[in-house]
Image (cartoon, rainbow, N blue to C red; front, top):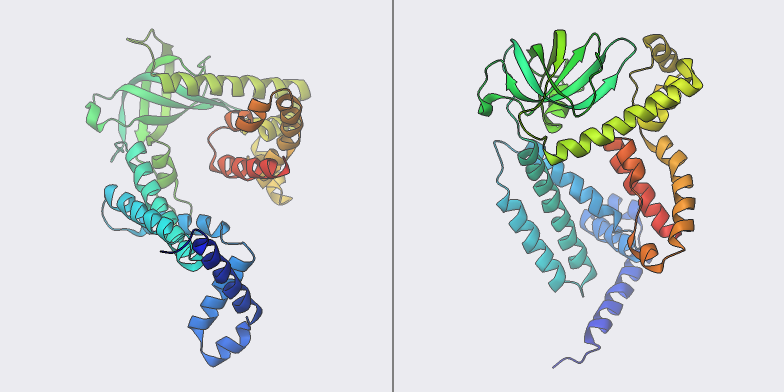
Length: 359
């Protein structure tokens, strides 16, 4: 029977082999000899020796998501979950063999990425309008974006041109020439002209329909005439209440910053903080595009960097008062204020990991 130190000896031997392979790593010579297998093994050994395998989990996860988008038909959720469980079990069994452990973990992340794609599709699944629809609409307002002229709102319709519930989109995005005092959380009624989601203008171009679908939006259009505020038949869903409360706070902060600074400087400053770009005029947008800095008004790394230093200092000062909080709490206020933008989620994760390493 092997002794208790057998596993440690095996891991030490594997690391020594990895170091030896890494030391003998000559990619040019291997490629010239056509030794692609040896080249791959040496690359993997070098990654193991320099402890750089962890970032490859994100690559494997992303590959799983890409495979989901490339899959035909409607993939089942149980299959990738079963694959992830099997790969995770193999990783546990192979934890004493670095190469086998790394490969098993990679497949685990790949299956998890595929599962995430399937789960996300099931979660946001909503009917999509197939033709132009004109008729009455009523429902709760989820998001309001004020613009230079009018505004744009997202509605959760409870009634839409007489469509049955199974054919009615979960969310509709509509523009108004005048917001007429509409705020997030209001129950409104009016007349809408709605269109199917526009597809990409060219192959490989921006696909608005895909992004709108994954945001739960099944139609776009406009509201014509007067919008009425009505008492709802029942209380709004809890998630709508939370989203509307956060969006109301974002709108208040946007308006306060814009009014305090004034002009287009205030509009740009508000966009930098909250991501609400509706107050920026088209002339200002053209100037920013011509200068090549238009990307700064979209919530991304710059904004997270501006906020990260402040939040990090405050968090360190406050968490120093409690050891339990220092070990278990993380700040996510900037994520709430900046909305559900994917760039925000990515950069929040990056900066969160950075702050944890600094701590």
